[in-house]
Image 1 (cartoon, rainbow, N blue to C red):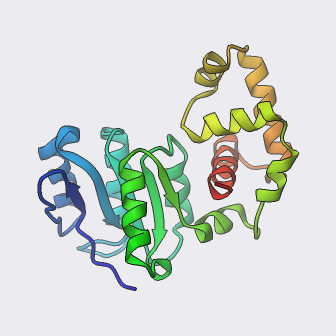
Image 2 (tube, rainbow, N blue to C red):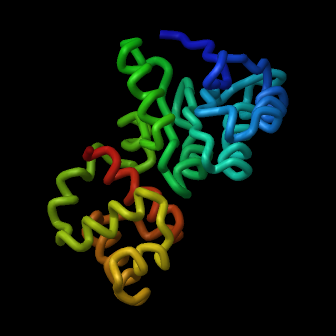
Length: 204
């Protein structure tokens, strides 16, 4: 199913942006009080390469309260990792060819706009580099699972420590245990954190 979505879904009306610059200009004009969610194609004019995803990342950085749902023809691993590396609340990444039901798409839009997340399972699988890790979540202790859930909400290590009323060192140990039990590859810490969060999201 091919989509040519409006870039912005507003509370009153749904204006469309023709390219990444127009998208950013519209977001800056209306601001977080006038926009619930930006629905963005990864590839936008003029070059149809990465204008859309670049704009989506800029929106998340400048206006973290505006939800962003990205539609892509295939998984852009570097950009998907960057988009999902921070707070995953209000973030979605769907593959256009796998969106076959309009009701499911509308449900995903509403979920992301409400502060939830919607990440295509194929995106998760490609970023994880294997078929699934959801069964490995069963290895986690209740506390480790709780920590992973807070990571998925976008909390920093300090925020998790404050939420659970434990030391920062304890949180770091829990996270190390999560990485080990999920058998995540020995890559940089930020990337492993993304993979752990994606595992959690894909299991829900």
